Image (cartoon, rainbow, N blue to C red; front, top):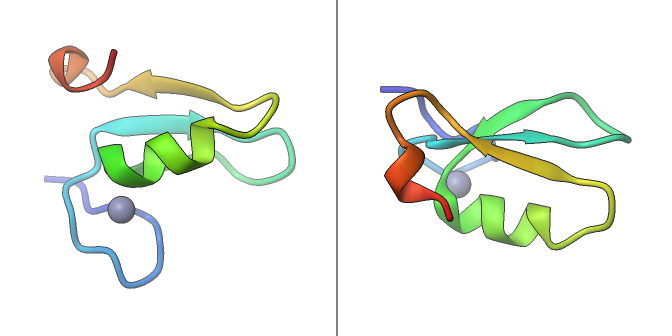
Amino acid sequence: MVECAEDGCEDEAVVEVHVPWADDRRVCTGHARVIARQDGVVADPLDGYEGEWP
Ligand SMILES: [Zn+2]
């Protein structure tokens, strides 16, 4: 599995977030929700995890 890219988080990464002001990274659903709330961020589920992200 891929681990969430956020510091101190060991959850499974299921979403790739594309952040205009930072590098793309793979994060868990919890972090993806927080990050995707910001303007301009696009969040895509990773292959095989389409059911994990609306
Ligand atoms: Zn996380």
